[in-house]
Length: 395
Image 1: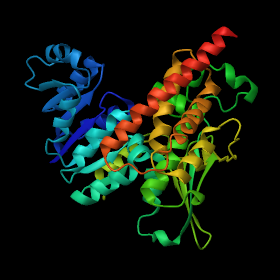
Image 2 (image 1 turned 90 degrees about the vertical axis):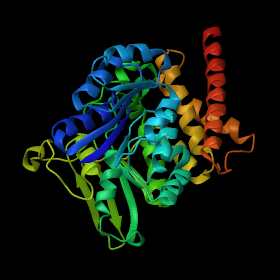
Image 3 (image 1 turned 180 degrees about the vertical axis):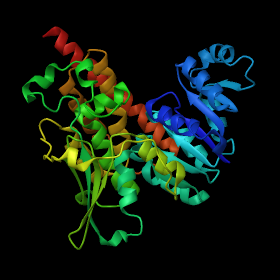
């Protein structure tokens, strides 16, 4: 029986992971489930899979979680310290699906125990890629990618020599605003950007898809996880979201990974690795699909991609700053302080401001360095947003 824990159980990745586990309950011993403010969902899932412990990141919600689990025998805990303690509990396989920088510390802690970390938390590689990979190597842990794109690359590389890889192509749906006139994007609302044509995801990642900040993060992840040069990484808009990535080799061949837009495929591959197991996902009918489209992404529609290219070339703390500023810019957009197309400017301005302080290209030496830089970058981005918002109000 495989011991599993799911960090970020109430989000879309966590829910899809639970769906797979619940279909074969005799195969899994669920150690820990964690969530944030959705206590009803967290408690219901903990009961459904008989988890040993349920943890909410919000300390003030511990009484609610305890009440929801009353009589179940499931332990309840809350707060950042409780998340780390849950990561210390022995498990064979841990899903890292907490959104944002909050997922960094639990993921690092889990690696200390030589476990398999199924990585859906983009921020871990973007902000601290070299540190994360070194931590895994130090403790003999395995990191498996869960993003559909990186899972696709990983699968295409099975049995291949990385020295023969010329390029990696990451596909992008283009998001919910891909067919909008570019001039109209400045007026897009969170509701507009939060509707995706193909994928069923949370609000924040869906908006990141529309701005392609999500794809920008994935380009940085590709560099860190697979150890390729920035010049070897490309992105292309593929509206059907059926080809998730392609790997090009030095003999001119392209290896493409196709699958339905269903995260249970990438999750299931990581859950059963190195084996393949039957998964409850749709089977593609190529004759019915008939056409697969590809388009070069517009640099003016998707400025996040150019910023990501800059981050990959710079290295150091730039990935951490990029992610922190991106999260704060998204907060500002959701709060109505800035427009949809202002987000990229906030990120670029934050990188420029911190570059002038001379710390951008210095590699962080510890997780504490990463978290410190993260907080400084968030504060800087907030000041930039406040300044822009005040200027808009006074215009």
